[in-house]
Length: 107
Image (cartoon, rainbow, N blue to C red):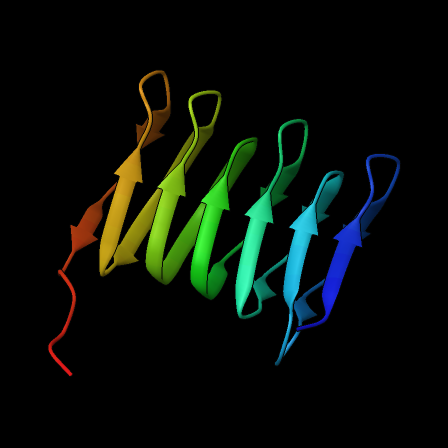
């Protein structure tokens, strides 16, 4: 799996797509992000739609999340419409929006 990192001093305005890898955001993205896994790290900010199998938010996120597994860390601030199969939220995470957790589908 290829790992792409948007560093703290980088701002990207536009969409990011990684068909076989993961994207870590330490800086700022204004646009949609699509990958196998997306992580918005502490200090990172994303304004746009997230689409991935796995999404982890430790920083600030605003938009729409569509994923299989969503994890919100204690310091995360999320304002989003969420559609996920499973979701875990640590104590201290802030979440505002519409949430639909459908549960895992049987094989």
